Each structure stands twice: as C-alpha cells, then as structure tokens.
Amino acid sequence: MELIRHCALCENEITSLKKGVTCKLTKKKPDFIKNCRDIKLNEKFEQQLVTILLELERISKFRKREYLIFCVLIVIGILSIMGNKIFAELHSNSPYYWLNRFMPIAVGITIIMGALFNLSSFRNKQKIALTEKNKIDSVLEKYRISYKTKFEYKEKIHGDQNIEITMEYKNWTKKRTTTMAIINTGFGL
Image (cartoon, rainbow, N blue to C red):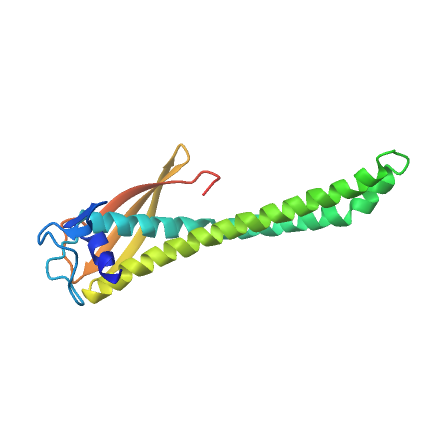
C-alpha cells in the first residue's frame, strides 16, 4: 500500500481495474523497496499538492467562522430548551399546552444536533485534508524534496477569491514556481 502512494504522484502510473496500479515504464506492479528510481514528479504531483494545500487554506480561513456558528447555535438551542416553560406559560389556557411545552424542547434539540453535525463535518474535512497532505509529505520526504508555499490573495470577482500560490521546492526542479487558483468563498464549504 505504501508503494502505491509513490505511484499516485508519478506521471508513469497506469491504473486499470484488471491489473490495478502498474508502471508505464516497467509494465509491472510497483516493487521497489524505499524509492523508485524512475519516479517522474510533474504536473500530476503538483496538482494534487496544490489542491490539498488550497483545501487546508480554505479550512483555516473558515475555522473561526465555523466555531462561532457552532457556539451561537448551541446557545440558541439551550435557550430554546430552557425557555419552554415561559413559552408554555404564555399559552397556558390553550388546549395545546403540552405541545407548546415540548415544541421548544424539540426545536432546541434539533438546533443543537445540527450544530454538532456541522462541526463534526467541518472537522472531518480538516482531518481528511491533513491526512492527504501527510501522505504526500511522507513520499516527498523519501526523495528529500521539501517545499514552501506562500498564498497571496488577489481580487475577489463574483464571490470567487483569486489566490496566487508561490511554491518553492528544494531538491526538485520545475519550470514554473507560481500557480494561480480560484477559491469559491461563498457561504458553504
């Protein structure tokens, strides 16, 4: 399984349902021990790395907002549950007294469950992105390739944020060091 991580970044990877992952050069499954001497890291590798780094940048940008929304929704849910008696007392002469008593509790619990689900979903996205980045980093470490990134936020057009990503690589050469990307900064992640 570890060897497939190398192949997933390499331009020489061939994937088929019948054979699985094979090398375009050797026409065999990966069988190297530590490093592949024929690995070709180019656009495929860089695209995967940039995608993961953008996702992590996006998550970190919305982190405070997600936790603030979580806290606000928890407070609203708790206030709804605690306020059920006051709401029911306002309608004490109503034939639906017990319904008026349980409705705010149900609404409060629903709001709290929604807040917990949203936070859990956000944290899962963050965990998945970090895991993917760590997989790429572990492969690059074996080839002694390191990188530095710099994100520069450009103009915002129709809700989409243009970001210029400057990548500096050590022990790996490439022709271009700047990549332009667009992040949709709409409400949803």
